[in-house]
Image 1: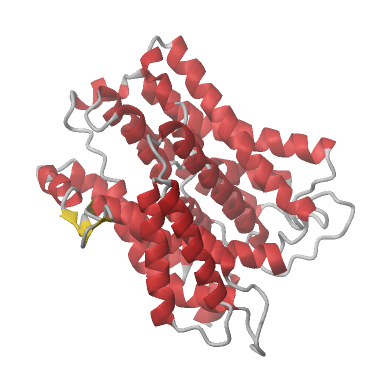
Image 2: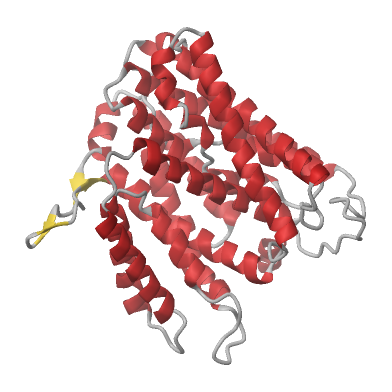
Length: 414
């Protein structure tokens, strides 16, 4: 379950099952299951708002486990990995900004041009990247490419999602409860202190994680942010005489739960877009919002990421990491067009669950994500077959690339 190829297969398989289930004669059963409410609204006299549907638990709760792993990986890369050089870390961060601005602009222009300015409120829908799906496709089809490409995609996608969550907080959140937010940050600080002590116990870390997550959820800020922040608090260098950094140790411990449980369940509840009801596929797919979202995710992400990277590396001292060339960013830019998680969330916040635009927006996110995934997979295989030069990032220094995507899994098999 720690292998990303296995996790990717489970994730994609669960998404296909959900799509078939949601458009089958038993689609009402699927919808009823997704909307089944589990959890308490109150604990004693305190309103905790944990009476969530199974779909919400999957998107907000289980996905926090995946974001915790992402936080661990990024902390390791920032402290001891390829992103410890600010000149290299800055490029994917700025590329993420370009990959949000251009899709939003394309969406706005298209809905106005096609005569549906009422859908303008959904401008942020094509700005987000689904980390889970993008990394899964890269793991399956990117074997043989430098692992720095995965780090670039991971950094870009995390910054992208954090910015998208910020957009939700500013433009789509009716109210932020600053008391709950402050309490969550306090618990995260306690988690960060305890996880750095000589011998932290998992049976104390797990309750701290849950409390921080619950408070973040109650604050109105997307709860998965808590997972990323707690991942960042873990020490990325060996401490207390240990041989291995705790970021690596915790990643190995939590990743099987993330890959084998959290992500497939999330995909099962997120990918079930109903295309049968609501006027049929022809009427749904003819909406201007569909063309705007597909154009934003597939074309906008490509132009925004490649254009920003080209501009930044030409006019600033910032450079790509060792082993990455501009051509490697073509499949990365396509993978960034896989919307899903946050895009689906913004669609519901933009138009409401009963709006005529909601089904069209969700269908467009699904279509764009499939197109982006297929194009990304094809370009990854093309890229892997091309000969690599000694200085792919053109920083006038020879690349020292020793690790490639799939190496770790191949070594386990042998």
